[in-house]
Amino acid sequence: MNSLNLPSEFKRSLERHSLLKVISGLSNFDPSSVKRIATAAGRGGADLLDVACDPDLVRLALDASGLPVCVSSVEPDCFPAAISAGAAMVEIGNFDSFYSQGRIFNADEVLQLTKHTRWLLPEVPLSVTVPHPLALDEQAELALELIDAGANFIQTEGGTSARPISPGVLGLIEKAAPTLAAAHTIAAVIQQADLNVPVFCASGLSSVTLPMAISVGAAGVGVGSEINRLNDELEMIAVVRRLRESFTASKKMFIDSL
Image (cartoon, rainbow, N blue to C red; front, top):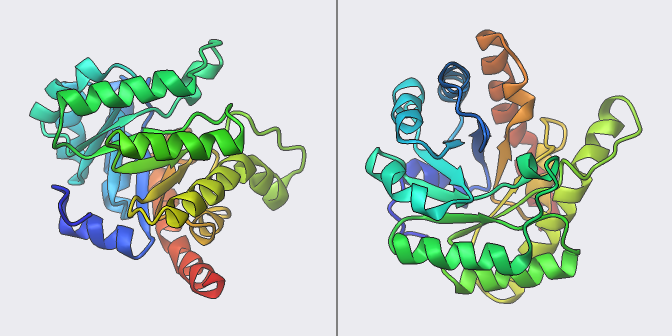
């Protein structure tokens, strides 16, 4: 991890299992929306901002947030221009926005995207999302293959597959269950393989379930809809701050689980 060209504070957050990534959305190319989200991420205390892969959005996000920026796409050839614009890292996925269109990414496709990205950008930090439609054992197997292909981070997803039936806190837990299960399974396999590759848990998380993500082995979390569904910037900042504060609870849960 120390060899990656990433800010020292970013690395410290990973080491403390407290990295907070705010996700504006792989398909969100609306500058005004991205600016609001970026501002909230910066003022709320996030560590990383994840935006759609577009050089202009990268520059806007950097200016509005003051945070390192990750660009997400399923088209690796778009990544170099975003890196030239100032992005610190790239990510393949997550794939949530495609599922409603009937677009499913299989393991081989994600692996090929990873290899192509690594060929294009051999030195740039790379995060890869493991598609949640795969069975958990298949997700774990793919994660190891992705690491072997050059992924520096593995991200989980699953919010779109969850069908919560309960209100309140129980419903929030039901919503997060798929990505939590994936994070636990993948983090355990990575640990067993004695690999130093952090897992990001994303999709369907909230301040209620963020501590659970850390307790099951994630080094960081990615949160999107909890923030970007709002229109008021002050409310967005408050949500990011609440997420940041929830790491206090997650740290206790993580220590207790050791």
